[in-house]
Length: 174
Image 1 (cartoon, rainbow, N blue to C red):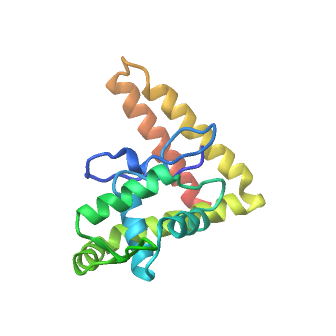
Image 2: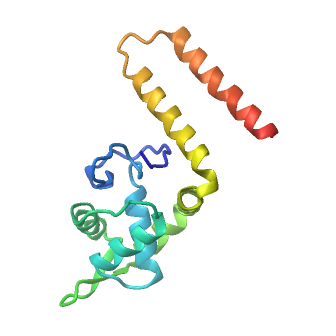
């Protein structure tokens, strides 16, 4: 399960769920896909296929967003008046003035997202880091299994958080 996780208060959208064969999980939390698509269009006008290709290259690994993710995202951005069609025949989109303002307001989130994607590419592209990647995936799986328990007690939640915090401190000291 190759994904980065972060939190945001926007409503969840099925348009941000990655499409991966045989894999589960979320690479893009709510609103992050829209932000990334808007960022890519701001760099130069694009159509959907170009966006799919650029996101696939940017994320790396085995991830490629589906047309069922990108085209509804484009429609949503257009409805929000953050993008508009530059060329209706070729379906090239450009960022509107409102889109530029929105990107400026979301610059910190965009910077954090691009850094997470860079780190993901680095981890997945470096065979020397395979053990770290495996360990990260094992931790995520163990947490998902534990958090799916309906009667998880507050004491256990505290113990889990404490162990993760301890591991983070020990890793930081290496």
